[in-house]
Amino acid sequence: MKYLVLTLVRQLSASCVALLLLLPCLAFGQGQLNPPSSTFTYPSERALNGSGNPVPSMKTLMHIDAGEHIPSRDPLKPNLDGSLGYYNLTSPGRYYLTENLDKQIVVASDNVTIDLGGFEIRYTGAGPGPTAISTVSILGTRNRLKVINGRIRGAWNLGIEAGYDCVVDSVDISDQITYGIKLGSSAVINGCTVHGPWVMGSGGAGPHSGIYGHDCSIITRCVVRGIAGIGILGQNNSRISDCVSCSNAGCGIVAGDSASLQGCVASSNGVTGIDVSSGNAILNCTSERNGGAGTRTRSGSSLSNCTSRYNSGEGFLAEANNVMDQAYTMNACTYINCLAQNNMTDGFKTTLDSSYTHCNATANGNQPPAPIGGGAAPPAVGNGFNLNDGCHIISCVASRNFDNGIKATSFCRIEANTVQNNGVYGINIPNVTNMVTRNLLHGNVTAPISVAPGGGVAGTAAAVAGDPNVNYNL
Image 1 (cartoon, rainbow, N blue to C red):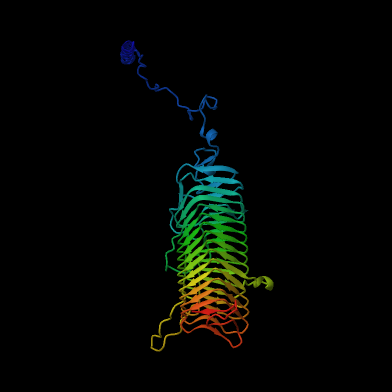
Image 2 (image 1 turned 90 degrees about the vertical axis):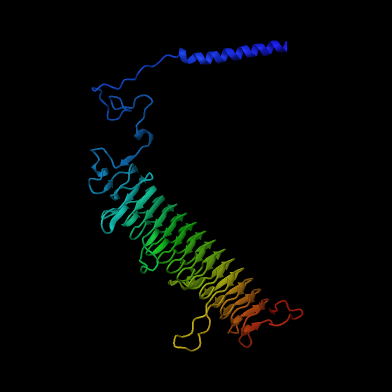
């Protein structure tokens, strides 16, 4: 029985193969496809019938992707074909590029979306050009513009300028003369790159910025470089996150009052790395190798998990804001888990009430050279912490700074810190109105603590039995 089944299977397989070989012979040829005759009339759009309606199963580009294309081939729309010397968008709606442009776009309506479609607007003229995309005219400023997905190149005076409630997303701008992106309040600027023509050492900072958002704006995931002014500027109540600002003539990142910065980097800028006004919250930001202070804050700001290294000024500088309300002027600043390292002057410096918790100031300051004509070199400069009246510093580290580890004026509480191997004093408190308790000191060159007679120091040598507030010098 088994052999019978195998024989039947072999016979069926052979029959199937023969049938497959025979199929091409049974197929009917289609014949040659002749081209249309010379009298064939092509319609203006082959997807349309004689009445101008889509034929079955066919749709025009307007049905699939509604909007006006730039440049337009419609003779009834000269404002969109470039014949005016620019493209004039006079109606709300969506516009999209179908090729690269070399003329500016003027937006004369609110509620316009421009999809660059991966194309670019390039300035090819001599000298500074106008604004590449602008809603600003003598008739006023238009609002609610959205520009996405493309590039702006060349010596335009300004890349994109518009009013409030505007969005710029995924746009790459380079070689503009002043602002790359300048928007009014409630702007959203996301995923953009702005690269100016400025190079280090080529001149001072101008009044403009690479990216500018007025009050209540969001600036996120942007990179700005080579601006002859400020890199990124967000005004009051703005949010700046995950941005990088490098090698600009002015400050790297600037914010107004009550703004929020998170995850930003400011490096190799000509002035301050991060410079903010009052009441700001700064989290997980880094400032490195800037020409002034790494991070400069004013009254009532808080910083957490921030790093400032190799800056020409202070690592972190807190100052009073110059406002009429004096109570607001002197609001304290707060630092938590921040690192100041290898800055040319103080690691942390404050001119108002501030608190420091779990912060680290290491190897800040420098030794100025001796005078050219001879003589002794000036004293070293740069404290780990340089504190004003009414500060509190607890559980911090001040190590290997050129001057003092911690220097305070009056009414400061200096508690449970590690202070070692600093170039002058570990803790320098020339006023009797400070409290210094439970600190660990070691290897400070001149003395562990310098204090005025009668100052509030619990002790500087070995532990005193039963005294929980004693300072240790080991």
